[in-house]
Image 1: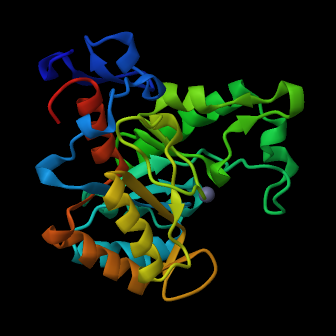
Image 2: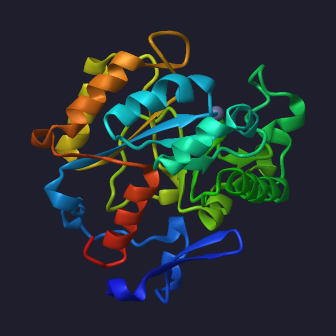
Image 3: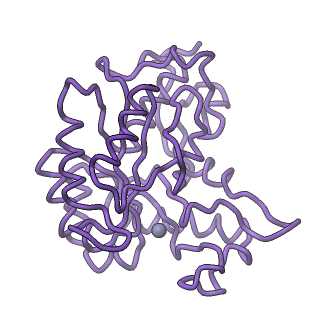
Length: 285
Ligand SMILES: [Zn+2]
């Protein structure tokens, strides 16, 4: 077992290395050791489960509606940003980052399957290569870090899709994400993450858009029963609309999470990832 003092976080080029001096296994998100039993994992301060609120694409309603609401509750979220939208509201995003919200990568050009009508064939994953994706991830990180003076350690797969190519030549780009980030988040999954076991490069995420609080609470309560880490994902933040996390749901969720009786740790993906790294590397989280 490694001691906490052996594990230091350093950044080497664009590769995040957590656990300098630790085994090679702790260098990459996908190679993090798993605990022998689920019960060996401990959330801090006696919490029973963790939740991260994540939002994609730097949609403008995130800065106009969402961040002010979250700030009312001193709740920090993770935003996987698209660069065009980011640059249109750059001052607001700088303030959000300075205020403790996490900024993650969502690639440069948001490549997804060419089956989506909003994806041009020129950025269809079916015609991507791993080299092109690697360049895109490195450039995206460098651009966000330059624009916002942050360090990017978290990634969300556009459309939740994790491949390049097609058919017999298809390849997963999960290993690339594991090499360049502490975590990679999916989309439209059906369950929370098991912190003792999960692959950090393929975190499962559940949709928050369109849910009322009772629907969200069902998932939260199931996560509490299992001691898991629930990663919610949303897009717009407003009273109603397509791909929209409702303000009323978000407010009720913040209130539910801050009641100590509910045993919830609500924090950014990075904060929870770092706690999981400590626990699974053998340090007392
Ligand atoms: Zn997206």
